[in-house]
Length: 470
Image 1 (tube, rainbow, N blue to C red):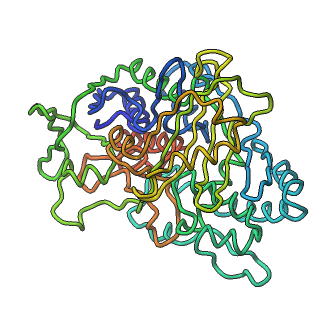
Image 2 (image 1 turned 60 degrees about the horizontal axis):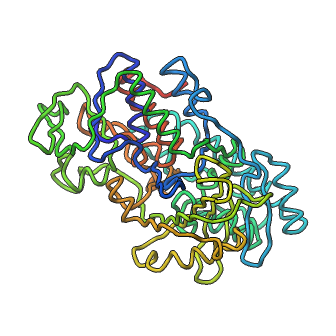
C-alpha cells in the first residue's frame, strides 16, 4: 500500500480483517495524510479538517474491524450552533446543528421574512439531488460508463420563470435565493470543500444539504485524534507501517500490478497494490507507468489550495463563542472559516486559546500576503484578536505539497457537468492496482476518504461481484 492517509488506513484495516497481510509504505514520518497537527508552546492546531461530517462512515469502519466502537476510541460532540455567519453588511446569524426548521427560523429572524422559506425550498431541491446521487457517488464503485453521473441531478424549480436548468452553484444563489447574503451562505459551503461556486456544478447543492441534515461533529483533541484512532486500529489488526520510505514504481508483469519498487532499490511483491497518494502525482512522477495522456485516469480539475493561520492567543475564550464562524468576503478580503474549539487539550491552560483561520485560495499569487487579510477577517469573529495575539504560524499550499504530495486539496465527487467533477475510479486500468483516498472515488473530505477505503477493500475482497456497501 502506498501512503498512510485516512483512505489508505481505512482500506488497510478492512483488508487485514479479511485475512490479507497488509504493509503500508509512507514517504513521510507519520500517518494521516492531510490530517495533521501543529504544536508549539502548549498550543495545538488541526492543520487539515477541523470538523467531521457523516461520522457513520467511521462508525462503520470501527464496527467492521474490531470490538471497540468508534465512540470508545474517540469522543464525538455535536457542534451547536453548527456555524455562525458574519456577512459583509454586518448581519450575523447562528445556524443550529441538524435542524431544518431551526435553520429556516434563524434565517428569517436575521435576514428578514422569506429568507428562510427560500433557503428551505432550495434544500428540498438539494435533497432531490442527494437522493439521486447518494448511492452511485458514495456507496458504489464508480461505473465504467459514467454518462449517467454526467447529467445534472439538481432540479429546476417547478414554477415561475426559473423553470430551466441551473448549471452552477452561483446561479442557484442568484436565481433562486435572491439575497446576496443567502448566496454567500451557499457559496461558503462550496469554498469550504475547495470549490469555486462560480464554476462548481449545481449538484454541489448536496454539500450544504449533507451538513445541515447529518450535522457537524467535533473530535475531542482535534481531528488528528481520529487519525490516531484509525492508526491504532490498523496496528491492532497487525497492519505493518514503514515510514520514511518512498515508492518509486509499481511493478507490472503480464498487464498486472505485482508489487512495488522502493527508493533504496528494494522491491516487494504483492497480490494487490493500493495507492493512497494523490493520483495526479502518481502519474506525473511515473510511479504508475503511462504511454500517453490518454492513459491518465480521470480526476477533478482541482485548482484550489488552503491557507491556514494557527493563532496562539492570550486570554480565555469568552462565553458564547461559536466553535465555527464563517466571515464572508468583503472587497479584497477572503471568506474565512474561524475555528475556536473549547478543548483543554489544544491550549496550555484556561488563560489561553488556540484558533485556526482557513481560506480557500485559487492560485499561488492569491496566497501572497493572504495572511494579513485573513487576520483582518478573523477579527470579526474573535474579540480583541490583535491585542491577544502571541504568535501565528502561517501554512500555505506549499506545506500541503510537502505533507501530501499535492498542493491542491481535492473536493468530493460531484455529478453533472458531463462528469468532469468525478475523481479517478478506485480500480485502475492496470489490473491489481487500486486508488484510495481523496483523489479517488468518491473524492476528498474525511467521510469520503473513509468511503474510498471501504470501496477498495470491497473490490479486493469480493472482486467483480462487489456492488457497494450495504
